[in-house]
Length: 378
Ligand SMILES: Cc1cc2nc3c(=O)[nH]c(=O)nc-3n(C[C@H](O)[C@H](O)[C@H](O)COP(=O)(O)OP(=O)(O)OC[C@H]3O[C@@H](n4cnc5c(N)ncnc54)[C@H](O)[C@@H]3O)c2cc1C
Image (cartoon, rainbow, N blue to C red; front, side, top):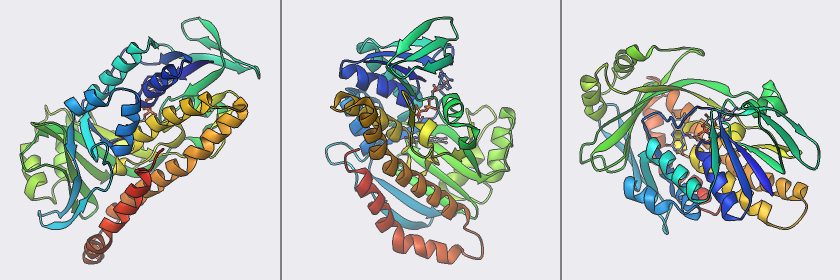
């Protein structure tokens, strides 16, 4: 079987490795002219680490990343609300956070070891599903036929639009997130989340010396902060915080490498494959980042697809089985992530005490329920 993977992001690279491991021929096209990933961190929870282990790159991930096993929630002034230990992992760490650049480089290394050819600056110009094969014409003029096209082309997926229509475009949540990599104080040995009214700041350890901060804040749709204003806007949004986020706010500089992303989500209803062309990863099920599960879901997609294609039955049966296996898990992650985002962002002066008590009473149990499911095989 010959598969075209569209997009050399986390999901596309993982899928290419998993497909090659099972002996399939794989081409990858990536629209960007070269590897370019913004310089912030990314957490990989245990289920994602298992997918990375199956792809043969876990040792490299562990060597450059930072392992941790809990999340502490604090009030804006630094008072501890609740300590939430993780129940994920066992055979792998509960979490390993690392820089996105390192994750990409490691996956690209894995793909290269499996002789995957990545064509940068290239995408599908047009494609025709002829029933027994998909004919693809690329932007560089090449024409090829494939047994399957697996599009991991991200939250703004052009393939999703072409195959399923603009009614499935991602929907903006009303919130955006600033991120920046910072020096790490020794006491940041797990995730720290600081909750203020309508704004939250979090910290994740990335290495022995670095951590990254994320600040989630409301913003109107279509807002575009100018990069030179990121530091001043972020300082203003962080005004309610004392403790660690307060110290960070005071030290922020215009030259800091701050990244801003709107938070949107999309869940493509089944089917994800129309004939021999399918939509996977963020293209099918991008979620709010609150469970740090987006990359893991994309990596699991690639692994489960490769396993499924390697199994018996008609192609149609194998693709339907893949979708049926992945959809409930993607929906769980999306619902839970959106639920956390909305709950945190709806905390106001009127419901603050009740919300904090609710976190103390229920957060450990709620978190463990979701983690117990995600700790099961993909
Ligand atoms: C603020 C924020 C924080 C996050 N934090 C985490 C976290 O801590 N942990 C986690 O697991 N996830 C996190 N995520 C989610 C995670 O980044 C995504 O879920 C993950 O990158 C999805 O992988 P993907 O391969 O599906 O898409 P992407 O990584 O977006 O890759 C898509 C690729 O396709 C390429 N492409 C696009 N269009 C085309 C085209 N037409 N032709 C060819 N190529 C194309 C793109 O250039 C890109 O390389 C976060 C997301 C956000 C927004």
